[in-house]
Length: 338
Image (cartoon, rainbow, N blue to C red; front, side, top):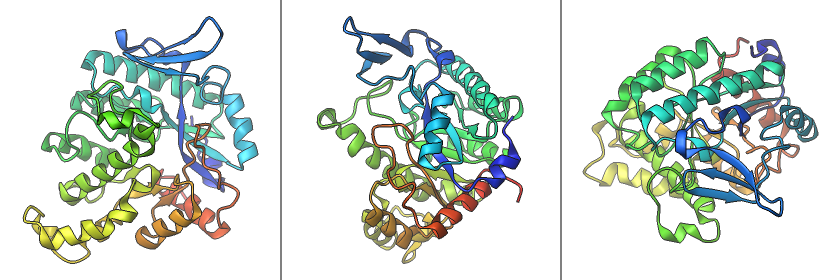
C-alpha cells in the first residue's frame, strides 16, 4: 500500500514515469507484449506487428524497481507515480484481450509498488474499448490494488468528447481520482498515422505533440470540461503545442460557428486551460517559462519520462519555488491529506 506519509513529505513527485512489467508479458493474446533478443544479443520488444529494436527493458529501471529507485536518488526525485508504457495501451485490440492485459498489468504494478511504498505509487491501465469494463477496472485498481488514478492514451478509438464516454468521466469524478492522458505512436495497435511520421522519429517528436493538442482542444471545444467541471485530467508534455497555438484557439472562440455557446467570448479557450493539469516534460527552460506564462503554475506538475531516451534533464535546475509549488500541486492532484 502506498505510504501516504512518505508521499505527503516528498519534496519532489514525478508523475511521468513509465514501466514495463514482466507480469504483463503475453497477457494481450497474440498482441503480446513480448521481449526477445537477436542472435547478436540486441534486445527487441514486440507489440502486435510492431517491433521496437535496441531498447533494453530487462535489467533497466523500466522493469527493476531497485534500479529505478537508485536512479531516482541520483536525479533528486523523492517519489514517482508509475504508469503504463505507451506501447501497451492496447486501446484498439479485442476487448477481452485488453481487459485481461489491464488486469494483469495493474496487478503486476501494484506488486512492484507494494515492495517500495515509500517511493512509488501507480496509475492504472484501463480498457477503454469497453466503458463498463474500464469503470470496473478503475474501481478494482483503486479499491483492491491501492493505485491512485487512471491512465489512458489520447487515441482511444473514439473522440474524447464522444457522449458515450460521459459515463466514464462521471465515474472518475465519483471516485475522486485523477485521469492521466499520454499519447502513443500511431499504428502500434490502432490505425496508422501520416506516413511522414515513420521517418526521423517524427511519430514521437511531432506526433505526440499533435495528439496532445488535439486531446486538449477536444476536451474543451467538445464540452467535456463543461459537462464534468470537477474532473481532474492531466496531459503530458505540457499539452503538446498549446503554447504556440493558444492565439488561434482563442480566436476560434469568437470567429467559428461551431464553438459552443459557453465558449463564445474572447479568451475563453485560454481560460478553460486552467481546468486541466500539465506536466513539465518540455526539455527547454524557455518553453517552460512560456508554459507558465500562459497556463500558470497552479496545475503544473513535475514530469520526467524517467529512464526514457528523452528523460527530463532539468530536475536539479528547476527554481526551488516552482519545485515546491509542483510538489504541492501533485499532492493536491493525488488527494494526499495535508
